[in-house]
Length: 351
Image (cartoon, rainbow, N blue to C red; front, side):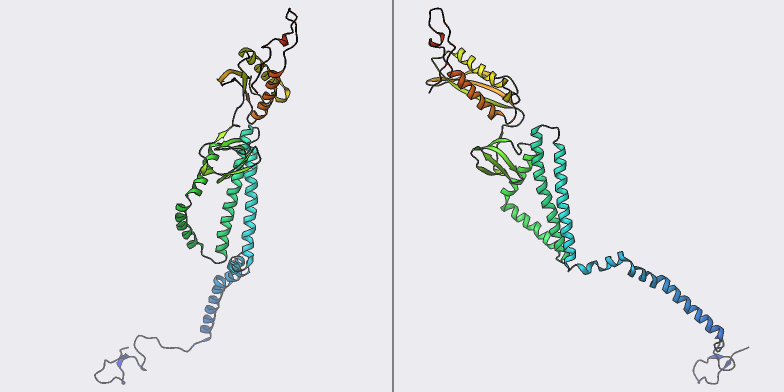
Protein backbone atom coordinates (compact mmCIF):
# COMPACT_ATOMS: atom_id res chain seq x y z
CA UNK A 1 0.00 0.00 0.00
CA UNK A 2 1.49 3.28 -1.08
CA UNK A 3 1.17 6.38 1.02
CA UNK A 4 -0.92 9.25 -0.14
CA UNK A 5 -0.65 12.89 0.61
CA UNK A 6 -3.10 14.11 3.15
CA UNK A 7 -5.58 16.70 2.12
CA UNK A 8 -4.74 18.85 5.11
CA UNK A 9 -1.20 19.72 3.92
CA UNK A 10 -0.68 23.38 3.26
CA UNK A 11 1.11 24.65 0.18
CA UNK A 12 4.85 25.11 0.66
CA UNK A 13 5.04 22.84 3.76
CA UNK A 14 6.56 19.39 3.88
CA UNK A 15 3.77 16.90 3.26
CA UNK A 16 3.15 14.22 5.92
CA UNK A 17 2.77 10.75 4.52
CA UNK A 18 -0.22 8.91 5.77
CA UNK A 19 -2.26 5.85 5.07
CA UNK A 20 -5.89 5.82 4.48
CA UNK A 21 -7.86 7.41 7.26
CA UNK A 22 -5.26 10.04 8.17
CA UNK A 23 -3.07 7.80 10.51
CA UNK A 24 0.65 8.76 10.43
CA UNK A 25 2.89 6.40 8.57
CA UNK A 26 4.76 3.75 10.71
CA UNK A 27 2.56 3.95 13.87
CA UNK A 28 0.30 1.00 14.83
CA UNK A 29 -3.36 1.47 14.91
CA UNK A 30 -4.66 2.37 18.42
CA UNK A 31 -6.92 -0.23 19.94
CA UNK A 32 -9.34 0.17 22.80
CA UNK A 33 -8.23 -1.48 26.15
CA UNK A 34 -9.55 -4.94 26.87
CA UNK A 35 -10.02 -7.01 30.10
CA UNK A 36 -6.72 -8.82 29.64
CA UNK A 37 -4.81 -5.53 29.53
CA UNK A 38 -6.34 -4.50 32.85
CA UNK A 39 -5.30 -7.81 34.41
CA UNK A 40 -1.68 -7.50 33.25
CA UNK A 41 -1.50 -3.96 34.55
CA UNK A 42 -2.89 -5.00 37.94
CA UNK A 43 -0.39 -7.90 38.19
CA UNK A 44 2.54 -5.55 37.49
CA UNK A 45 1.39 -3.09 40.16
CA UNK A 46 0.93 -5.88 42.71
CA UNK A 47 4.40 -7.29 41.97
CA UNK A 48 5.98 -3.87 42.46
CA UNK A 49 4.18 -3.50 45.79
CA UNK A 50 5.47 -6.87 46.96
CA UNK A 51 9.06 -5.99 46.05
CA UNK A 52 8.88 -2.62 47.81
CA UNK A 53 7.44 -4.24 50.92
CA UNK A 54 10.10 -6.97 51.01
CA UNK A 55 13.13 -4.79 50.41
CA UNK A 56 12.17 -1.52 52.11
CA UNK A 57 9.24 -1.76 54.51
CA UNK A 58 10.11 -5.02 56.30
CA UNK A 59 13.76 -4.03 57.11
CA UNK A 60 12.52 -0.74 58.54
CA UNK A 61 10.02 -2.55 60.74
CA UNK A 62 12.70 -5.04 61.89
CA UNK A 63 15.16 -2.29 62.84
CA UNK A 64 12.47 -0.27 64.57
CA UNK A 65 11.45 -3.22 66.75
CA UNK A 66 15.04 -4.42 67.54
CA UNK A 67 16.25 -3.44 71.09
CA UNK A 68 19.85 -3.04 69.97
CA UNK A 69 18.89 -0.78 67.09
CA UNK A 70 16.58 1.17 69.36
CA UNK A 71 19.38 1.78 71.86
CA UNK A 72 21.77 2.84 69.13
CA UNK A 73 19.22 5.14 67.58
CA UNK A 74 18.21 6.79 70.85
CA UNK A 75 21.55 6.82 72.71
CA UNK A 76 22.33 10.36 71.58
CA UNK A 77 19.00 11.46 73.00
CA UNK A 78 20.39 10.83 76.49
CA UNK A 79 23.40 13.13 76.03
CA UNK A 80 21.71 15.96 77.92
CA UNK A 81 20.44 13.70 80.71
CA UNK A 82 22.22 12.46 83.86
CA UNK A 83 22.01 8.79 82.83
CA UNK A 84 25.10 8.93 80.63
CA UNK A 85 27.03 10.95 83.21
CA UNK A 86 26.16 8.39 85.86
CA UNK A 87 27.41 5.55 83.65
CA UNK A 88 30.77 7.28 83.14
CA UNK A 89 31.20 7.92 86.87
CA UNK A 90 30.35 4.32 87.78
CA UNK A 91 32.81 2.95 85.21
CA UNK A 92 35.56 5.30 86.42
CA UNK A 93 34.96 4.31 90.05
CA UNK A 94 35.08 0.59 89.22
CA UNK A 95 38.29 1.03 87.21
CA UNK A 96 39.87 2.99 90.04
CA UNK A 97 39.08 0.35 92.65
CA UNK A 98 40.04 -2.64 90.47
CA UNK A 99 43.32 -1.16 89.24
CA UNK A 100 44.35 -0.10 92.76
CA UNK A 101 43.73 -3.64 94.00
CA UNK A 102 45.64 -5.04 91.03
CA UNK A 103 48.68 -2.86 91.77
CA UNK A 104 48.59 -3.79 95.47
CA UNK A 105 48.26 -7.51 94.71
CA UNK A 106 51.11 -7.54 92.19
CA UNK A 107 53.47 -5.69 94.55
CA UNK A 108 52.50 -7.91 97.49
CA UNK A 109 53.20 -11.09 95.53
CA UNK A 110 56.48 -9.68 94.25
CA UNK A 111 57.82 -9.14 97.78
CA UNK A 112 56.98 -12.61 99.13
CA UNK A 113 60.06 -14.59 100.06
CA UNK A 114 62.39 -11.68 99.35
CA UNK A 115 64.48 -9.57 101.68
CA UNK A 116 62.96 -6.81 103.81
CA UNK A 117 64.70 -4.34 101.55
CA UNK A 118 62.81 -5.68 98.55
CA UNK A 119 59.61 -5.48 100.54
CA UNK A 120 60.19 -1.80 101.29
CA UNK A 121 60.86 -1.16 97.60
CA UNK A 122 57.66 -2.93 96.55
CA UNK A 123 55.69 -0.97 99.14
CA UNK A 124 57.01 2.28 97.70
CA UNK A 125 56.20 1.21 94.14
CA UNK A 126 52.69 0.24 95.20
CA UNK A 127 52.11 3.69 96.70
CA UNK A 128 53.29 5.45 93.56
CA UNK A 129 51.36 3.03 91.32
CA UNK A 130 48.09 3.72 93.13
CA UNK A 131 48.63 7.46 92.72
CA UNK A 132 49.32 7.04 88.99
CA UNK A 133 46.17 4.93 88.58
CA UNK A 134 44.04 7.62 90.22
CA UNK A 135 45.48 10.34 87.96
CA UNK A 136 44.96 8.36 84.73
CA UNK A 137 41.45 7.08 85.51
CA UNK A 138 39.97 10.37 86.68
CA UNK A 139 41.61 12.34 83.88
CA UNK A 140 39.91 9.99 81.41
CA UNK A 141 36.62 10.37 83.30
CA UNK A 142 36.85 14.16 83.18
CA UNK A 143 37.49 14.25 79.43
CA UNK A 144 34.66 11.77 78.79
CA UNK A 145 32.21 13.77 80.89
CA UNK A 146 33.04 16.96 79.03
CA UNK A 147 32.45 15.20 75.73
CA UNK A 148 29.21 13.67 77.05
CA UNK A 149 27.63 16.99 77.96
CA UNK A 150 28.41 18.35 74.50
CA UNK A 151 31.67 20.22 75.10
CA UNK A 152 34.22 19.79 72.33
CA UNK A 153 37.37 18.60 74.07
CA UNK A 154 39.66 18.89 71.03
CA UNK A 155 40.22 22.64 71.49
CA UNK A 156 40.70 22.09 75.22
CA UNK A 157 43.37 19.45 74.59
CA UNK A 158 45.10 21.70 72.08
CA UNK A 159 44.97 24.60 74.54
CA UNK A 160 46.30 22.34 77.27
CA UNK A 161 49.26 21.48 75.06
CA UNK A 162 50.06 25.14 74.50
CA UNK A 163 49.54 25.92 78.16
CA UNK A 164 51.75 22.98 79.10
CA UNK A 165 54.60 24.42 77.07
CA UNK A 166 54.11 27.79 78.74
CA UNK A 167 53.89 26.29 82.20
CA UNK A 168 56.94 24.17 81.52
CA UNK A 169 59.13 27.24 81.73
CA UNK A 170 57.51 28.46 84.92
CA UNK A 171 57.22 25.05 86.61
CA UNK A 172 60.66 23.68 85.91
CA UNK A 173 61.18 22.86 89.58
CA UNK A 174 57.97 20.80 89.63
CA UNK A 175 59.05 18.86 86.55
CA UNK A 176 62.46 18.34 88.14
CA UNK A 177 60.80 16.96 91.30
CA UNK A 178 58.81 14.42 89.28
CA UNK A 179 61.74 13.30 87.15
CA UNK A 180 63.98 12.94 90.21
CA UNK A 181 61.28 10.90 91.95
CA UNK A 182 60.99 8.56 88.97
CA UNK A 183 64.74 7.90 88.88
CA UNK A 184 64.85 7.40 92.66
CA UNK A 185 62.25 4.67 92.37
CA UNK A 186 63.92 3.02 89.38
CA UNK A 187 67.34 3.03 91.05
CA UNK A 188 65.89 1.98 94.44
CA UNK A 189 67.88 4.61 96.33
CA UNK A 190 65.59 4.34 99.38
CA UNK A 191 62.13 3.18 100.34
CA UNK A 192 59.53 3.35 103.06
CA UNK A 193 61.05 2.34 106.41
CA UNK A 194 64.67 3.04 105.48
CA UNK A 195 66.98 5.00 107.80
CA UNK A 196 68.38 7.78 105.66
CA UNK A 197 70.30 11.03 105.91
CA UNK A 198 69.29 13.78 103.48
CA UNK A 199 71.33 16.92 103.98
CA UNK A 200 70.95 17.92 107.62
CA UNK A 201 67.95 15.62 108.20
CA UNK A 202 68.32 12.06 109.49
CA UNK A 203 65.42 9.75 110.20
CA UNK A 204 63.02 7.11 108.92
CA UNK A 205 61.34 7.39 105.53
CA UNK A 206 57.57 7.43 106.05
CA UNK A 207 56.28 8.10 102.55
CA UNK A 208 57.65 8.51 99.03
CA UNK A 209 55.79 10.07 96.11
CA UNK A 210 56.94 11.30 92.74
CA UNK A 211 57.26 14.82 94.14
CA UNK A 212 57.93 14.68 97.90
CA UNK A 213 59.76 12.41 100.34
CA UNK A 214 58.55 12.40 103.96
CA UNK A 215 61.08 11.68 106.75
CA UNK A 216 60.47 11.37 110.52
CA UNK A 217 63.52 12.20 112.63
CA UNK A 218 64.43 10.89 116.11
CA UNK A 219 62.61 13.79 117.81
CA UNK A 220 59.36 13.03 116.01
CA UNK A 221 59.53 15.92 113.56
CA UNK A 222 58.17 15.15 110.12
CA UNK A 223 60.20 16.59 107.25
CA UNK A 224 58.81 17.12 103.75
CA UNK A 225 61.63 17.24 101.24
CA UNK A 226 61.05 17.87 97.54
CA UNK A 227 62.75 15.25 95.42
CA UNK A 228 64.33 17.88 93.20
CA UNK A 229 66.22 19.29 96.21
CA UNK A 230 67.80 15.94 97.11
CA UNK A 231 71.32 15.87 95.73
CA UNK A 232 72.75 13.11 97.94
CA UNK A 233 71.25 10.47 100.21
CA UNK A 234 72.84 8.32 102.90
CA UNK A 235 70.97 5.05 103.41
CA UNK A 236 71.97 2.96 106.43
CA UNK A 237 69.47 0.14 105.85
CA UNK A 238 70.63 -1.27 102.54
CA UNK A 239 72.38 -4.65 102.68
CA UNK A 240 74.65 -4.61 105.81
CA UNK A 241 74.90 -1.93 108.49
CA UNK A 242 77.63 -1.33 111.08
CA UNK A 243 77.34 -0.44 114.75
CA UNK A 244 80.41 1.68 115.56
CA UNK A 245 81.50 2.88 119.02
CA UNK A 246 84.45 5.13 119.84
CA UNK A 247 85.61 4.81 123.44
CA UNK A 248 87.74 7.53 125.14
CA UNK A 249 90.41 6.06 127.43
CA UNK A 250 92.82 7.97 129.69
CA UNK A 251 96.54 7.83 128.95
CA UNK A 252 97.21 6.31 132.39
CA UNK A 253 95.69 3.01 131.17
CA UNK A 254 97.52 0.37 129.22
CA UNK A 255 96.34 0.06 125.63
CA UNK A 256 96.34 -3.74 125.53
CA UNK A 257 94.23 -3.99 128.68
CA UNK A 258 91.73 -1.45 127.35
CA UNK A 259 91.50 -3.22 123.98
CA UNK A 260 91.00 -6.59 125.70
CA UNK A 261 88.25 -5.22 127.95
CA UNK A 262 86.40 -3.57 125.04
CA UNK A 263 86.71 -6.69 122.89
CA UNK A 264 85.38 -8.96 125.65
CA UNK A 265 82.38 -6.67 126.24
CA UNK A 266 81.63 -6.57 122.49
CA UNK A 267 81.73 -10.36 122.17
CA UNK A 268 79.33 -10.69 125.11
CA UNK A 269 76.84 -8.47 123.30
CA UNK A 270 77.21 -10.48 120.06
CA UNK A 271 76.60 -13.74 121.96
CA UNK A 272 73.56 -12.36 123.82
CA UNK A 273 70.40 -14.14 122.54
CA UNK A 274 68.61 -10.80 122.43
CA UNK A 275 71.06 -9.40 119.87
CA UNK A 276 72.43 -12.54 118.23
CA UNK A 277 69.88 -12.36 115.40
CA UNK A 278 70.86 -8.75 114.71
CA UNK A 279 74.62 -9.30 114.49
CA UNK A 280 76.08 -10.28 111.10
CA UNK A 281 79.71 -10.89 112.08
CA UNK A 282 82.32 -10.91 114.82
CA UNK A 283 83.11 -7.66 116.66
CA UNK A 284 86.33 -6.00 115.52
CA UNK A 285 88.40 -3.72 117.78
CA UNK A 286 90.28 -1.29 115.55
CA UNK A 287 92.58 -0.16 118.37
CA UNK A 288 93.60 3.43 118.97
CA UNK A 289 92.19 5.60 116.18
CA UNK A 290 93.00 9.09 117.52
CA UNK A 291 94.87 10.93 120.26
CA UNK A 292 93.28 13.84 122.06
CA UNK A 293 94.65 16.23 124.64
CA UNK A 294 93.81 14.17 127.71
CA UNK A 295 92.73 10.81 126.28
CA UNK A 296 93.05 8.38 123.42
CA UNK A 297 90.17 6.93 121.37
CA UNK A 298 89.70 3.19 120.80
CA UNK A 299 87.16 2.17 118.16
CA UNK A 300 85.14 -1.05 117.89
CA UNK A 301 82.60 -1.96 115.20
CA UNK A 302 80.13 -4.81 114.77
CA UNK A 303 78.39 -5.74 111.46
CA UNK A 304 74.61 -5.80 111.93
CA UNK A 305 71.42 -6.34 110.00
CA UNK A 306 70.04 -3.31 108.12
CA UNK A 307 68.36 -0.95 110.56
CA UNK A 308 69.61 -2.80 113.65
CA UNK A 309 72.81 -0.81 114.16
CA UNK A 310 71.15 1.56 116.63
CA UNK A 311 70.03 -1.17 119.02
CA UNK A 312 73.36 -2.98 118.83
CA UNK A 313 75.29 0.25 119.39
CA UNK A 314 73.31 1.04 122.53
CA UNK A 315 73.99 -2.46 123.86
CA UNK A 316 77.72 -2.07 123.11
CA UNK A 317 77.90 1.23 124.97
CA UNK A 318 76.27 -0.23 128.07
CA UNK A 319 78.50 -3.31 128.05
CA UNK A 320 81.73 -1.32 127.49
CA UNK A 321 80.93 1.16 130.24
CA UNK A 322 80.30 -1.72 132.63
CA UNK A 323 83.58 -3.42 131.63
CA UNK A 324 85.70 -0.28 131.97
CA UNK A 325 84.33 0.81 135.32
CA UNK A 326 84.15 -2.60 137.01
CA UNK A 327 86.95 -3.21 139.60
CA UNK A 328 89.36 -6.07 138.95
CA UNK A 329 88.69 -9.32 140.82
CA UNK A 330 90.28 -9.39 144.30
CA UNK A 331 93.22 -11.83 144.51
CA UNK A 332 96.47 -12.06 146.46
CA UNK A 333 99.73 -11.38 144.63
CA UNK A 334 101.94 -13.08 147.20
CA UNK A 335 102.81 -9.93 149.07
CA UNK A 336 99.42 -9.70 150.71
CA UNK A 337 98.18 -6.83 148.50
CA UNK A 338 94.96 -7.52 146.65
CA UNK A 339 95.38 -7.25 142.87
CA UNK A 340 92.38 -4.94 142.65
CA UNK A 341 94.12 -2.35 144.80
CA UNK A 342 97.20 -2.11 142.60
CA UNK A 343 97.28 0.83 140.19
CA UNK A 344 96.67 0.04 136.53
CA UNK A 345 94.17 -2.77 137.08
CA UNK A 346 91.20 -0.51 136.22
CA UNK A 347 90.65 1.22 132.88
CA UNK A 348 89.57 4.80 133.35
CA UNK A 349 87.76 6.97 130.89
CA UNK A 350 87.97 10.75 131.12
CA UNK A 351 85.15 12.39 132.99
